[in-house]
Image (cartoon, rainbow, N blue to C red; front, side):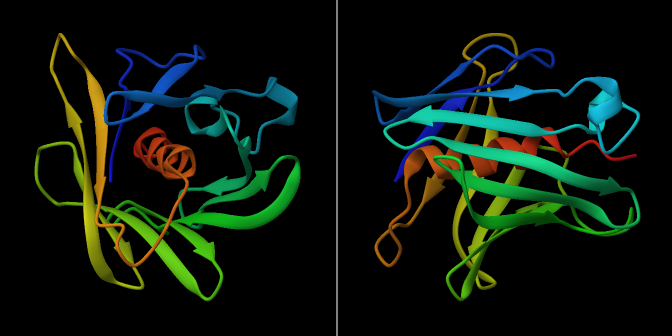
Length: 170
């Protein structure tokens, strides 16, 4: 399964199209809360994602600290279904963990200079995500071997966008 979504030049609250192949499956946007409602005083660290499609998802940040990382609630149609956490501390590779059933889907940054990451389920690599395009045709892509696991492409795109938006922690 290959999923792509727009890669903005700067932080934006506009909706980004989500595509599986050449078919648009949904849209999503990052949103920022008013200053008094944020877990952090800096809006750069306020990562909330709204995904709209056949099923709507909200990834809402509950806490953030450089030492403890991020913690998000994942809602499906306004019902809490899971959580997403990030790596802790500045010395760890950046990653986000989506907890589902008895498993964990992880997106973990590579140590390279390129904007890339591995997609893992229970520490077994099943795909990759990367930033594509420099000035034109800018987008993120997520490629997953989905033979053993079925995921909503809009949910995967939302988790990947959460990974990319929360990547700046220092």
